[in-house]
Image (cartoon, rainbow, N blue to C red; front, side, top):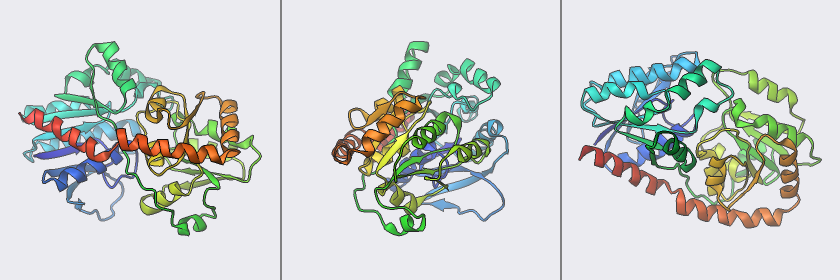
Length: 365
């Protein structure tokens, strides 16, 4: 099949969970012999590679406005796909549903993947949240197939519209090798002597709650924060201003450096107020990390009994859980094996790729 992926920043993954999902699935499908196209966002005029792991890359300019950028690129990419004889066009994002009509006109099959209930994102302006909420149902009817990566989100659509999307989770690659200390030394970190957060630095990720809790703990552990926000720095500046001297902001880190920083962590924390199934959380679990998450349904669904939780938005409860886990390394070490088993059973990328391929094949039939 000839399959195009539309509506994200593209691959290699350098932005969020959707990009990670596309990279893992698209490259596996290419190995199976399918012809894969991924549309990527382009910033600046740097030379761009035309392919990545046998996947063709096509670049679309980015806009500065976050709320216009993704719909704009989805629209332009969908127009371009009309001329490429694509069998399936797979869109990502709640704001991409209007553009699935374009490839449908050209007789291509369409898939739309959603993540969390995005209209609850507190970092979005009210007008954007209202539009996303009012148009949520269209995401189920415009494409041929709609998928979500969380059973909690699937249940919301089932109850609201009596038309549940298909559940296809994100995944992770199990890797239990020891970290290469090079990047740790470069960042002045010690193996298993820091708490890690990875994600976009936006308000709904709850990083302010983590920083507030960590400040109240007397410890020689460091708090390491990996990530940024290409659309604005206000929240990051707020975080830096309120963090203590044991907090390190590393910005964007990718590839082997990111993997080694994850492997070297003592504990991984996800304080999100809104989430789908977080690939960063799954990656930490797949590397044998003890995880501590906010108790939103999506996070609890991901970890099962293979991690710990705290009341979301409650920095005092988060502080107490952090203190307990920092003081009990035997418990931290024990839980890692449950995390690994859970990823192996429920979040294997090869199985997830097979599931997506089944969906595409069923559409062609």
